[in-house]
Image (cartoon, rainbow, N blue to C red):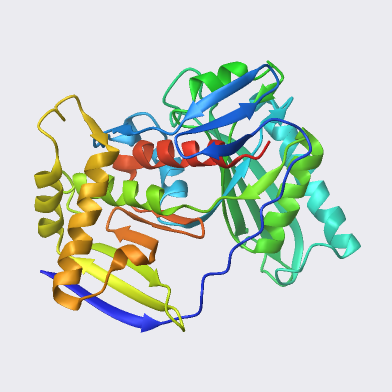
Length: 352
């Protein structure tokens, strides 16, 4: 059965976007395509109308299981980052020392907010091999910041106070090929931890690699794609529930939470799948019909037009995603599916 409930809540706060001074990114001119001036040429990136249907993959066969556990189950705040100038995966130990010294200097100057009484920070950069899907994708880089409380006993382990990673999965070949050799594209940046540390880390990257960061929210279309793709996983990996959150433009704004039985969601999704969808792809028309079916069912029961509002959150047992750019991946089997979509969103969001 499909159920709905509503609750009052304040409007969503929109985060500001920083613009960079160099032309490494993209800007939207129309709904169907985006133009980008890169270091090599002017390119056009068309927003995909089809995607590969999700396939369960045992990622532990390619990626160290301990590293996989670092990426899933945490809630990550998304940002985009423009190409890194002269970044080298072979210099990660040097970067660890430089960022650690930078944090210490910022803390001494009072610009880094305290996270308790620590005696110092230890920064670790590492490469997560196996996440990349194509030869053009740069390998994922994971960053972990640890500290030791001032009054910790001898032998006490360091405490992780911040984590982050930069990745590129199935990045646009046209965009990646247009970059000059000195630039490395890891457009998706995920962070978990105090915002003041995130600000310091971003500041170091910008000074070190002449790049710029910006907040990465997820629009309704991206959330609808995730809703459909996760639902399509149900026969192979029980999604357990499909929960969606809309905000309706009332005064005050009204939040509507809509929970759908997983089997009902799957049957609706299967019914809108087109007969020619045998090539392992999913089309945007199918996604739109699926969402229209969910909204139509809700209207029959509650006489509320969800289409008049804004989709703010989608969640299943496989993961969740929010309009404000917070994502949680709970199942590694579909990591590539989610990161492919988020990589695309990051590249599209980059301003000229």
